[in-house]
Image (cartoon, helix red, strand yellow):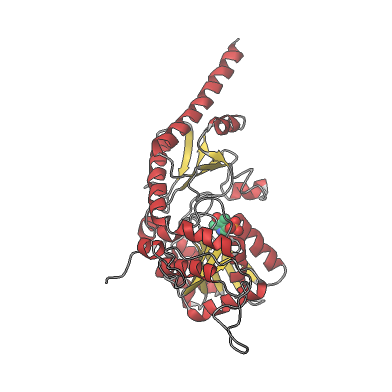
Length: 397
Ligand SMILES: *Cc1c(COP(=O)(O)O)cnc(C)c1O
């Protein structure tokens, strides 16, 4: 049989593997401990922190989806990030983009302050200058996150990985924003993929989890050793849930992307939208790289509302289908105000430097009917216009 497609691999992963009862979907093993068959003899599993069949299932399926040697499932995306930093020694240089996920920015900064490694913030989306800096500084690890949050900047994984490998650096890619359905960093030269499975992989906003997938078996073994040592491995129940989500990733992802295209097209025609950030637009600076390295353009977008500070709540309060909440990648559509929510920890100056204005809004486009989503946005824009008209009428009176 020819090589199976990702949808087939993950949908069927472990199906019909239960030898006890022929359960079609593999059972959930909650047990914290496993019996030794005999004195001096150990079975495949002994203790759930170290290994668990349900968690291993998810790790195996994610490795299949990303094309890696194996996967370590962790309790959260942040514990996956923490786990990968265990590969660094004091004095090793880590290069990471200044606009990486806020939690990663905080963790990497705090660990570097404690001397766990050296840290250099590099604008990896500027391919040529970033590659030159990598060759000059010879880091031990380069941390890529593409598309970035909330401005959807695109980093050329192949280009950055080639420069990093010239100097013997490990390349890590946080693939949370696209999922393995949208991008396969290992095939583009990355050594390690990190996921917050909380987002598209689980996809139903009811689990917090993470994963690390490695291309190389020796690196995988080191990560597994640290995961057990630190106790950052994921819970069996969460793994079961995330596995259930992963089985439908392909079909969800297609709908997310199709809806995002429709929403982007509607936003492009809207007078109250300024600066639409969506890699699917030809005018987006990362469009060509995204078209080359991604499968589609994802379902995250952001835009600046051409409105006053007072009008932002008018718009947000008028939305009925986009829920005001952090996070992304669930079946339900969300809207976030990065300045006061996801990126509130940044100072006003840092926000301005990162291009996050107080009028910036971020959408995670869900899988509701696209027409309903577009109508919801149009209705909220109309509410801003109505409020404006109301205000000017009062001024005249
Ligand atoms: C959410 C997220 C994380 C952190 O994951 P948690 O599951 O919240 O710990 C890391 N990276 C990116 C890009 C994310 O979106």
